[in-house]
Length: 176
Image (cartoon, rainbow, N blue to C red):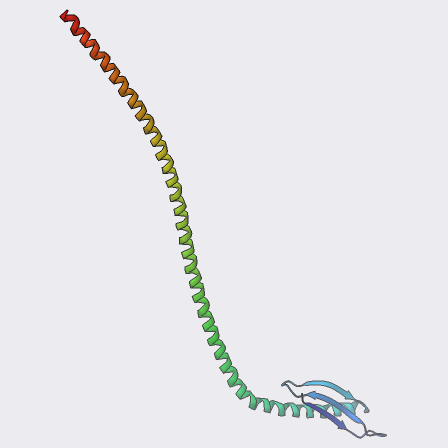
């Protein structure tokens, strides 16, 4: 840190003491006045000393501004370069974000399609279970019908035997 002690000595009757003491931090642009000590003079002396101190302070500030202006050209070029680099980095980041978002959208679409496929598979599995139940029911119905058909066939066969016997008896009765 660079400090300038600007002490202005004036003639004060009875002693030689500082009229104004100003401490200035010149490390950064827009220098800061850290402390001001005004002593030993009347109002007009204080005013004159203040103006002198202000003039000296402005000289130092102008000198520092010139230094910073010279350095500022390089700084401006550096800032422009850094700004361009930042903009390029932002463009790359934006492009990467867009690509990431597109990939996420594609993944979501694939996930949605997979969920739809899973749902359809579950629906088909349920339909298969229902069809198996229907096949069992139909098989039981067919088994029952087959039993009834066998019983009907046996009944028909028995009735046919009775009819044949009755026919034979009827034929036999005519011949007697």
